Image (cartoon, rainbow, N blue to C red; front, side, top):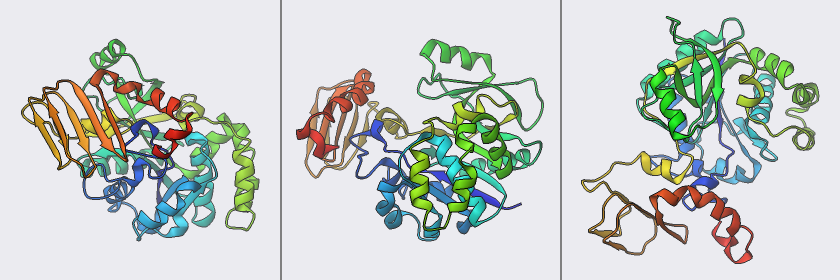
Length: 358
């Protein structure tokens, strides 16, 4: 059976501002390793999927960035553009029909472009196992990450841990919990982090759209016929204006009784926020994370510093602080207050004088 990879890369990365901006969101940045995040994702799977079978879906506002920076071995016709963001259900629906039309039926592995993953060999093993499980009984398969701490920034998946197989039946999906609840999940030994990585046959996911998201599925024939014609852009724009803004998790996976989970035993991080960004970097002897050349830290401890400017940044006598200097923005805050950044950003958007910094 043909194997395809679909990389979701249409996000704006606003929770990672000011590192990530509207003009250059996080998937087009080098936040770790040697490449931008989309290309790091491609590198992790290139031993499993042929380049001509790797597809990337983005927002059309990012098309110039995509054509310029995405690995040239990916055919440009494999870069799918959305007219607007309508969450993961619609983008997966559109991309699935596109793959079916220009390629054929097969099995699709859905990945995100903003994940940090170590031990790519273990990731590849999980994907291969997941594809085998997805071949049977129209299974919808996800990769769950073994939790290493009671994270409150990730969703969780409850699974049947009584099964003695290389996969488990999913019982339910859980939203991001508070710390006490996350601790309960960890202790119970029947929860994993929801990685947002999915594997299924084209026919299996389309049947699920028909069953659980009929208001979206009803546009299937009209959209499918338009693909690779002069009418495609206009028709997809019309459809996007009518469909629900909903994730694939809420729209299908939480309702389905044939979701299976492969356990992913590799270091994984969804870099969704500034806090997550610092988590993937090493600390020094004083528990500081310091990123950038022009930084002089004196009597500073338990502090995260990022300086992407060409100006010297000096700290004296600081503790438990985040300092971010990037894209002509400087943020200084207590570590406990970093989660207030998205709310502040929304207020900044309302004032004209700040818009050039977004």
